[in-house]
Image (cartoon, rainbow, N blue to C red):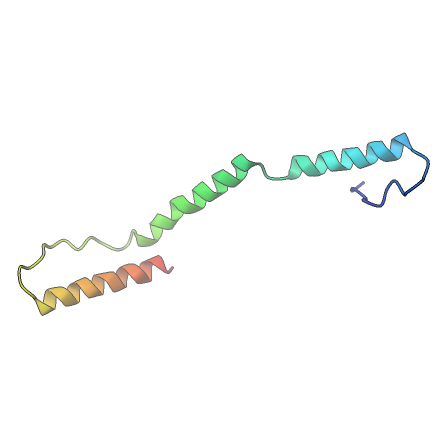
Length: 89
């Protein structure tokens, strides 16, 4: 029997069976709720998988040019765009 907040009714005679049923229902409800450890584990698992979004993006693999190099700058911008798109998945 699920918990019924209307029982016992105001000014009704006390019934041990009714009270026991209410307390048993509340206990069952409490036992089914997630614990802090359950929530922490779920969050940790979700966070651990977010890094996987960027696994397909390779490292840049080149050093910086000492002067402005338009080709190299475009490569950097392309790599940043690739990373942003991977993280949005």
